[in-house]
Length: 202
Image (cartoon, rainbow, N blue to C red; front, top):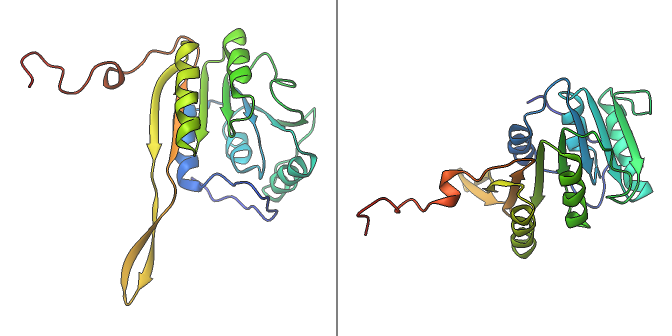
């Protein structure tokens, strides 16, 4: 995964590079996909998606954060505008969401139930949501399941090494829960049947 430049900072984000790697793997964006992001913030995910998808629409409810997205896109050679590959919209989802998305990413939990309703109504093929708080993760999983969107939940735990007295120790980051699904999603066997559910298992 190529490095990205994020010269403009924001109080929230960016999504860590390791988490983005998992996210992009789950989204599996194609050249003809229309990718939609809710809560672009620093633009880290927007930049990664713009390198893979045919079209990108990024929503951000705060004007200053949207400008941060725009500046960081530009720093990576990506210009945003209605006639370009990337479209930026100052809007609070579900307002401003297009009806032709192939893949949708929720980077925050604000109004996520309404966003999921929109995804169901418009038949979004892949929906991914990142959550850092356990209680919200539980609500998100139930919301995906209630709408027949849920396919899997992944906990991403990353630790970074640092030097300590001539040796290497690790500093762990908070886990991120990645909820994955989409139209006509089916839960994997590991989620629907316990590992020890074989006949005769104790």
